Amino acid sequence: MEVKKDGDRVIFIHEIPDDSNSPVVECYIDDKITPFRVIEHPEASQHARWQLITKELEFAEAQLIIAIKRMTAPNNLIYLDRRNEAGVIIKALIDSAIVGYIKCFNQTKGRKVKLEVRNFFNKEKGLNYLQLHNLVKDLRNENIAHAGISKSEGSLMIATIDPNPRIGVSSKAIFAHTSFTIPSLEFMKSMLELVRYVLSQHSNDLQVKLDAFCQKAINDPKKYKLEDIY
Image 1 (cartoon, rainbow, N blue to C red):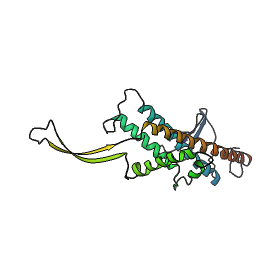
Image 2 (spheres, helix red, strand yellow):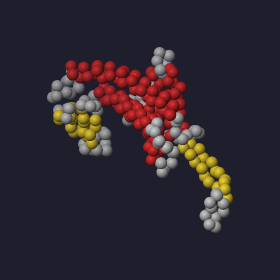
Image 3 (tube, rainbow, N blue to C red):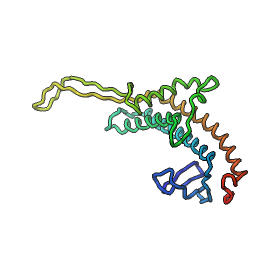
Image 4 (cartoon, helix red, strand yellow):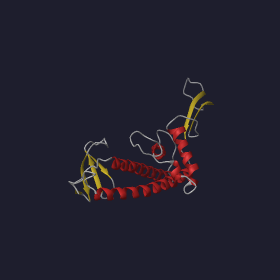
């Protein structure tokens, strides 16, 4: 069984460890097992899907924080090579944060909900973040998800002279040079600010909707088939 933690006090346990859509079999609040019912109602399902976006943004925020912390650690030599553990981890964190953030603005068959750019970056609020949002989207589209033209990767054939050739091997050498880069520290800090802005706006808007729905469900348990628990 897998523990699904939805907060400091509430823990749900799923029947199948690697399937988040498997049935919830137990609920704990403050480490005490409690009765529960899954609310099978379209309105409830939609609100839950919006909460998935909250979780995605929270993960993106956490990944950026960890990446920035590692990038600024003293005496931490980072280069993007498979043999450099620090570089591999930082690239994975940054790529995942970028994909997760942009995923929240894309329509998917599973979630059926998405954030709208016009609701976060307009004349009333957030317009100063629009250019940065578009840069992050381009990074996702041109480098991470697809092999487009990007300064994040490069490849060259280079001819050189090997000063220490192996015995019987010519000193004339040709190498296929490939390289990855990661966004600058300044960019990562700006993206963290962007993610926090979107997360804050989304969380505040969603909380209003959740509070209203919870009140309706508690006041009308029959409509939501909660009579046996409420």
